Image (cartoon, rainbow, N blue to C red; front, side):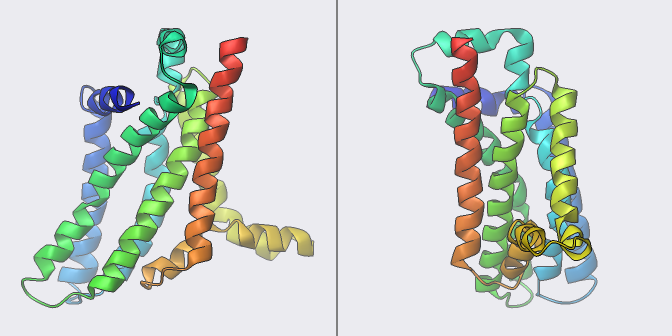
Length: 234
């Protein structure tokens, strides 16, 4: 598993993909930090993390689009499936690499808070809650988009499917307001990433929301493993 993780992590920096992802994340975090904290003269970073919600939704599909589909396209998936490593090990290695890249990218927010601490006193518990929420959001979307990448050999299709899921995540709160069925309203509210993420931007660690994000991550990791198992026997 560690060998897969190291290989996938290096791959991100052997192509423009990793640099594009880092550049986009650093640009948005830097822009929001300057606009709402430095220019706004406040140590409250909740607005920054709130605005990063849609940014992460639409950047994660770019990060994960090649994660599984590239091996299918190049035929190296057959080598992986016959290697002395479990399918779960393959999935966790690739997943760990994407999560590592994402974690490094969002660490810019911690560096910005550290810089701000030279001039004012940030509310570190709130910042920690924000960061944990952003990390949970990212690892959940990575798991979902990795599963979508495992369904196709086209990076483009994997990215489009990821964007569709991200769009649904953004619109699910609106859908809860327009449907008449009480069951669907309750379902859409339960599935609302935005509602669960909002608590983290206030520095509140809600255990149900933590379990929600982690459960979806685990579910899609297992689904991705199931896709590999099916390919092995087909």
